[in-house]
View 1 (cartoon, rainbow, N blue to C red):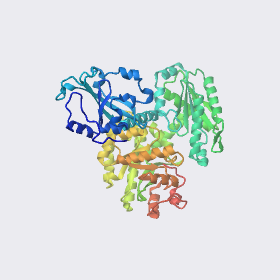
View 2: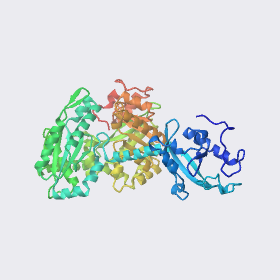
View 3: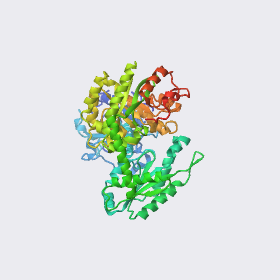
View 4: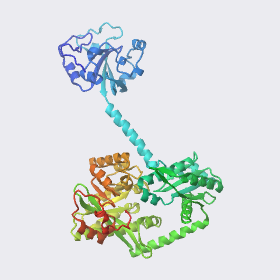
Length: 625
């Protein structure tokens, strides 16, 4: 932008005031970072400082005597010459009592947000003035000082924050992959007044949907094909949902369609058959055809239905029968299916015996610190050595443990076994390793838990800083009266670390990070598995890692299986990983052997067929977590 020479540049000389060479006031105005303009009561520019010249791209010589609206407003907002001729500042107007934010345009056509303040000055206050101004009857001895500040960055930031808030609120009630409602939205819907009335009137039905052989799709075609299949099912359900219905994804391959205003069993079964046929239409994906099959369990509100949760449970039991009966069919709940409850009761009894007889053990999965390519710790994962069924994974019994009020007992057993394992690692010379343990809401809510954990650490001569307690986001959302902030604070005062587990599974994780202090997060495998195929997911993952770094928080990426995922996480400066690519969960004795045989690891570490993942100790029959 051309600049006036100091000798030719207009001086700040107010009408009726004695001219001076370079008064202090003008020097101050010239060095302000904010723009300042002096205009008369008709809005014409008398003077402006250099900061304003730089802000709008015009020199004082170009605009003095002109109205700013002639050139700084966008063309479609500029007033007509007639309106400009009529313009006058009103001394009693509200303009002088507030800030004004407007979108303005520079000389080069670029736009910016301008925050303006207006002040009225009277020339009687100027030394040497006779109070008559320059003879302009419109001036009445008054001028307007306009302060200008470019707040474009602030406006952009606030807009981004508003968008992020909206996205977080949406994410809190919707599934990330399909866009359908999640469990939190389902709970709110089922407890709403209209739905409660439908239940009382017997005019609501539930369809519980589960994909048939979904694991085979993932195993044979990959997770991208699995994601496409889930979206295909979500679209089919949405097409068959009415305006008052709710379509919800409740789990990995599990969906619910709540059908409002359905009066008869026949009407509900007709809807279910439509869904079955719609989703059965083959899915074309990546030059391949995927045949999608589903099973449906149906239930209908009756005179004895006490709640929406009971209705969903009945549909779930009907679904169990549909899958056991050959899949690809719809089964309506009957009293006969209620016998399934007795089977659950049997599992509950066996689980109580397991707690009493300590039929559990922990498997350890190592964690790799990427900066040094060293094993820094392990996660302890509970297993049930069932006397008849063999080794059972948590997914088989934890839900029943929750229903049977045994989850806290299982957690305390797991805690002690994990600390025993850490002590065994110590005795083998691995004094630097840490141990991550999972904690459910019943244990987290127990005021005695920190004391019991402290005693367990001291009795084994273990430092609290070598233990990380992992809390699921679902524990935070479904904790009821649990004061998570207080519970986390008690643990951190003890000296143990606290991490947020399964981060990125569709809940409002960012809100949890700001709600209470934690030491780290574990990125869920559902995010990690899409790193190579989803650019947006890569951006989100990198941003989360960077954000945690700024907050001084650790990050562990779980479920890392491929070299591509490892490379992406290295470039993103992810501190730590765990997953099948490194090693599968294994018994404590096997972990000790694995460490003796595999350490030190090569640096940089690469996942190969001859690497840690393929080692016999990796126990290929044990699932990830």
